[in-house]
Structures are given as C-alpha cells and as structure tokens.
Image (cartoon, rainbow over all chains, first blue to last red; front, top):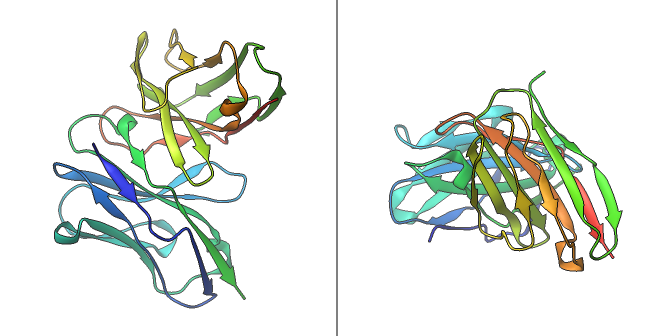
Length: 115
Length: 112
C-alpha cells in the first residue's frame, strides 16, 4: 500500500529564511508526487507535481521540490519565506497509471512564519 | 470562474439525522472525490467517481454514501450520522488522467 510520511508536524521559520519541508513516500512503483498548500479556512491548492523528467520541479509562489528516488523523498523548498506562506502543507502520492482521484496524503506540516 | 462549490459550509446536526452535503463543479471534470480531514490524520479519501454512475470506495467509506447522476454534481450522504463523523469535508474534481485536483472550500460538520 502506498503511504506518505511528513515527519515535521509544525515548523517555525523567520521571514526571509529558507525553508525545507520533508516528505517521504512508500510506493511499489514509480509514483506521481504532489505538494498542496492549505491556507487557513481554505481548500487545498496545488503547488507543484512530479511524475517524470527533471527531478527538480518548480511550482507556484516560488516553491520547488526535488525528487530523490534513492531516498524515497520529495522535499519542498523555498529560498526566502514570506509571511503569507504561513499555512499547512501536504505531500501526496499516487500511482503513475490510474487516476488522480487515488491520491494518498500525508498528515501535513503546519508552517508558522515569524516577522 | 472555474470552481468547486460545496454546501453547506458549516453544519451542526444530531446523531442519526440524515444529511446531504452537495458538491458541484463547473469545469466538466470526469473525476470527483470526497475527503475528510482530521487533525493529525491529514486527508483521507471517502469515495470517488470516475464518471456519471461510476463510483468506488476510497480509504474510509463506512457510514457514507455517494451518487453521481450528473457530471457536475457529487453529493455526499450521511444516512445516520454519528459523532465520529465530525470532521472537515472536502470535495475535489479533476479531468481525466493525471491533472490537478481542484478542491472545494470545505464543509465543517459537527455531529452531537
């Protein structure tokens, strides 16, 4: 069965500092990987996705993520965090063949940004 | 504007009183899903639908029903709600294949 682990429940960074959110997945084949962001009181918005090609993918709002097959990881990074990035972030994995409706989500990492 | 709408946004009800949460999308998407979000558990899929009249169970389907009679609508039905179904519910839709899922704003349900 596929699974996603986000080991950090809560992270606090200062505005302007760099950010890395960790995501490890377990999947028996090549996965399709996503990062979503959920702002307070809002639904989820897709930040970026990866399924093949360049292992460093760029997303919206200045975020990027790197797929490392050997480590089963798909960590999310941002060089300089803005106060508006405070939100909850979810990593998700799904089968490469199938449908986007079979995603498995991690438990989320809540990001707090201090001024 | 492309969007997924859910109604109601907030609902407080009592154990055993049947309720329906509606979900509608205006993007002509084939795939629709329902998730529940609970603290420390992330999002877990309840049911999904690949097209009209085609539905399948997700990871936590017990206590829920769905129907897909029209492409744009995918209501979630709780025929006899219980307190353990108190949660934040999200509907999502996507086109065929591996495309971005669009999420609704969520419905916060409290069952007393």
